[in-house]
Image (cartoon, rainbow, N blue to C red; front, side):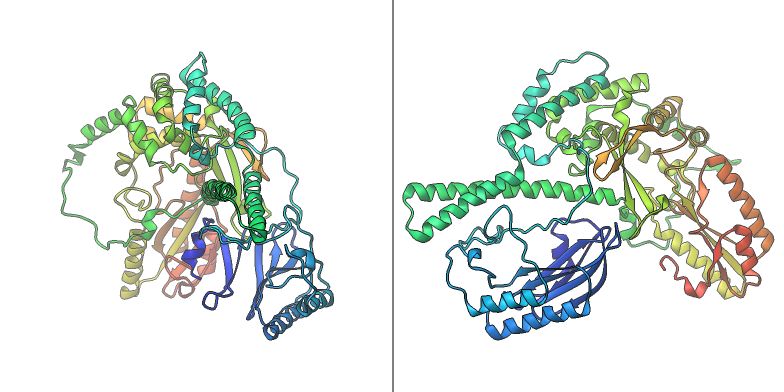
Length: 619
């Protein structure tokens, strides 16, 4: 078993796993868990079992799970009973034991009830000796169908053990991408969409249509589509029925046709289920947030291009500057075209989690041909009037723990789930901003700007340190972390900086409307709370002048007064921008034999760490 195979199951980056590899085509156990929910304490690998001891993050309860793939021979079964007995002996507390034992505990667990064998009696003795309780099955009498199904479909039924959960409120509506696999669904959406008559502004008409369409989809899903799990269960019960009949006698031609139809129905529901969980896994990936940008995975070039002249200065004035600023401002504020909007829509991931409107990007991608008129009218309204309906900017806020056992609010990372229409608008604006971002962002900022690579900053830092060491100079490296850089910036500061950068009045009005109309609804255990307006800061177009996204590195001589001056600079930076230095994550690193480094760290208000203990770029 490889990590690539495990990741192909469609889970997010919080997946952890342990495996007992198969011996040829026999055996094999895989245990997976979400590390945000469970913390692995210990594990034991046996010949026929794999055991993990967990701590539940929510309440700290410690318990164990043992997965079993039982052997066939009597001798090997005794080895298995010894294994599970040993686990019971070394770990205390609640214990769940499950898997394929290749032996039944009672006669009723087989379709054709036979006599009680010595192996069954021995199994019952082990269960009794270990103090185990055989949980009764619900939803079906058996866990396996003896008839061969198509290779992608297992003949074993999944077993779900429920141990209690949070009391949840009603879940918000979410458009299911799998619905498009139902024959005639797109035509149905088209007829509903075109049949809804609404008057008002473009953004109001779009919002009202989505609201009415949502109600129609809820009714359709309940009456026509039905419950996915229930449909799968009904289909597999039909497969089971024909399996049992065929074991007793040969099937007629009509009955064979019915059996084939049942298998096809089951395969269809399995396919829809796979689509549903692929969308759900993408959603989990988005909730995790902070995905690495592609710049982290590229090889960094040690040399910048210096032989290309794209502008010239005379008496300190760039001759190309005025023309570039004028052309850039005109491009940013130009009317939106259908091609521009469609290109942005196609670039977006259709499987990501929807926001409060419930409609995924995949919905807009599939229905573009008959919804584009209203969408383009909304873009025209935004261009001409510098505003849209405020409810389009409603946002779900999901709190993702940064570490196991998170309790304090600072231990959670807020992830925004935007509505599809606002997400599309933001994508179009971001695509425009990309074309000028390299002209307004300082060259000291190496990340998240096209043509620049984040590893260049590390290379430059290494060159500085190497130069200090060769000359025998002493110095101090200050690694500073910005606390919640994207969420606490002062809006007025942001707009004033953009004015200084040369952005036009219309663009600034667009940015102000986008950041000031946001309303956040926090998702608690899957249920949204009431909306609240973000007043002091929030999601915004973030233009940084730092080395990294929310980190910066400062090099200075090893003198206390230099650290004092830096402390005052940071103080005024915080006062002006609304941003705050996270001193708990910041540190001072001496290079060379630096005296009184402790006093320098106190002056800045952060800790210090030996250079030998710090490997540049990672810890």
